[in-house]
Image 1 (tube, helix red, strand yellow):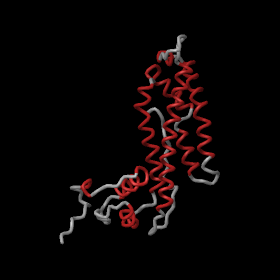
Image 2 (image 1 turned 60 degrees about the horizontal axis):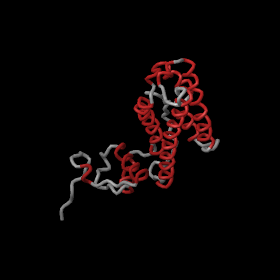
Image 3 (image 1 turned 30 degrees about the vertical axis):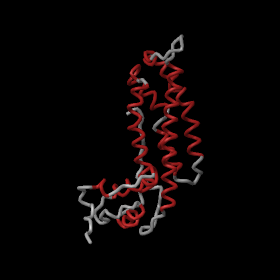
Length: 214
């Protein structure tokens, strides 16, 4: 993995046990999507700035062999930081001083700091190409997304399942046995992608309720 991520078990969204605030969840789900998309773009911008600063030859062509040089590696990390640090500050400041999202965003961008990049450059050198980077980044983004998903949907427990299934138009699932992670997937599909699932998608699952005949 190119980058590290410090996860947390603290929920950012606190909800009353038997009542789901779907409006709040939808707002935070949209916020989550924007945060992830922004981070992905910022990481790409930071890498491009680093490689252009440290691995460009006299003709303006990218030469990854230059990344094997320690001085060039430091130049890469410096250029990376010039992109990432202001974006990290902007992300945290936009959350508000008392907003628990600020702590989550700080941990998120902590995994993109200058020391992390230097460590990767020392380990990989000229193998730290854009292709290699692009292969590793999804793992980092996946860890971030998992943490933010917990933030948005972490208040959903067994008592909230019937209401959540109703919201997702998935009352064909057994609220007593359907896994919580399936319920979260239904809600994230609805709020983050506008998707609705039919019972056909759950054919063969033990928590699919039988159809009733007239």
